Length: 135
Image (cartoon, rainbow, N blue to C red):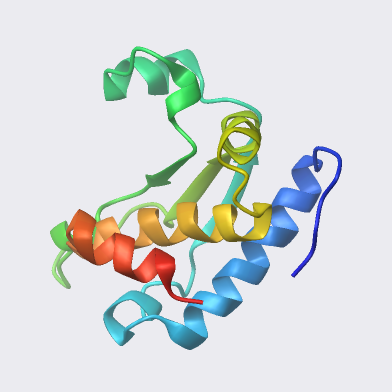
């Protein structure tokens, strides 16, 4: 597992996310791993004002990741999604959580991705926490 002593760039966060997706595809339950095909990973510094308002957040630093696209729980074969799904990772909030929690950065990025993916198939918070603890 990579160790970071300085804040990683956007590109390094993307590389960590790609590694996390590969990890997830091998280990997650089939109903989660199956939705990974075609998911794009995007990394931005911070959530924009529109996203913060849309989610009703008081503090943009609370948002480390976000699924964009139609939730898997609302899809049907009769109405395919109009845009490809994407997971947005927010670099600065992730780095702030990394510093506060001292969780390894690769594990933190993986946990953010798993959290966003699992919510799309209706996993409860308890089920997500169990998945996040799996190594």
